[in-house]
Picture 1 (cartoon, rainbow, N blue to C red):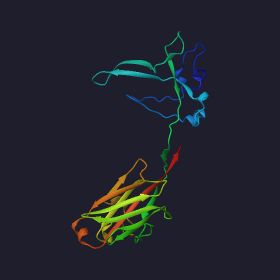
Picture 2 (picture 1 turned 90 degrees about the horizontal axis):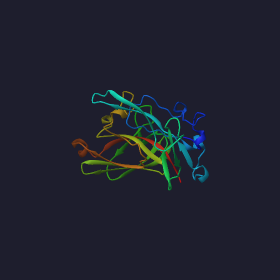
Picture 3 (picture 1 turned 135 degrees about the vertical axis):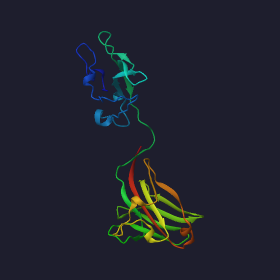
Picture 4 (picture 1 turned 30 degrees about the horizontal axis):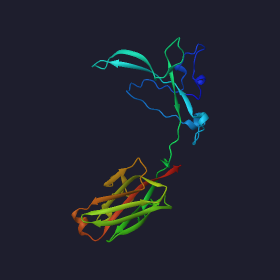
Length: 247
């Protein structure tokens, strides 16, 4: 990939030299392969793209194989992305062009910075800053605290039939990466170690999100003891990341 044809490695006779191409994974043995080129870092392209710099020359070379029913290679051949031959003489290597365009509208990207967060309530007996919420009826609202100091959203808790409903709504710019939640009829019913710190890996309900997720609503089934008591102990632990939007 280059800004001009002459920047693609070639011999003096005009034949391409695949061994000098900058992107060259080996031993793939796959039917498809995808890689990403940072057009800003490699070519200095920025959106909006200057039309005079928007066309790139690309040469895609591969070795493909045909196998029998036992997976044994019976034929191997050179392959090129279809385009225009580098030269009418010599090898049959080809190149083609691609015009870079910028997507319109706002684009948002997750940042890899998820931080521990807890629904604000009463500290556990241990020496961590983990907290639990005491629910006694109606609709309870609590802040969601990220990294021990930052209020990044709200937690709403209520009972609906045989379920405890937990709804988390984050402030703009924040996203849920994962959650661990546990509800019990007593504090001792929430998994804790001997020091009194919660063991989030043992919490009954958990999930992960790979896309931007600013809010979730969970329906947690209550057992007979939890339905009959007037007080529930709820621990809500989350990983909260940020996201950035452009456009």
